[in-house]
Length: 346
Image (tube, rainbow, N blue to C red; front, top):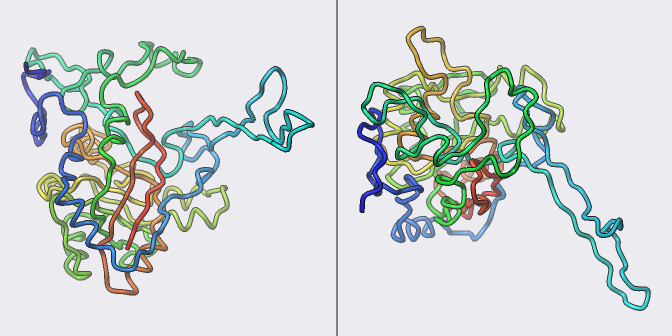
């Protein structure tokens, strides 16, 4: 029985390509053959951690209300479970803690429930909020209903929010192992705040002999994460907003290439992969076109604030651009994003 939830789908979308009930998007392209091809990129057996420490960048950057993790000791009957020796007759000592963790604050994946769009999916002339593959707000991605002016004081209850569909557990179950392909934007732009369009990207791919094939996970090295590390959890506005390369998501040819090349996901060491705010366009109806195309229309996950510099330098020194990438999110049911500790093996 079909579970199709739309009469019309957005232009340039692939809804239904992997089945009407699909919740994994292009992660479906990580087939056993492609995982084996990724494993063939392992020659040295060396590994690289591609995550920032999760208390970076630090502060409440961009006023996004995304804070660093806060660790707390578990308490039991008023006793703190840190350096706890439960019995003087035994040698055992215990520590136990819990964490308040913002899913998009540091190195993370954007989930398919993270971004939706207003679209007339029923063909009745009325726009509704829809997500990848036609899943619906308040039915599949559940949250409280309130007016915009109420948001400042709203304190959500646990039972009121969560992705009943498109949660991060679907991406986690796909395991996320495949071939990573490094694109070194920092080599060409340095700290310059450059909006990289289709022509620019194609020139870089040709000059650096980078090949992108269907099923690949693209990693964009801009150098921003390395710059943030040097700022020791106290980022300045100029670094946050006016430095390092971003994709120009107003470039329609660039968006078409993302759609047609068959990439599985895009990860970058910057805040949003694309430039935010995007280049001015008086006729634009979307503030973040790459997020809308990738997450809503194509089921392509975006990775943000990855730490790519050490891996990039190693690859450059050996004339390589490909590696095996392992990057599953937390298997956290209902979440719309997740911290990730990606591992590259070369």
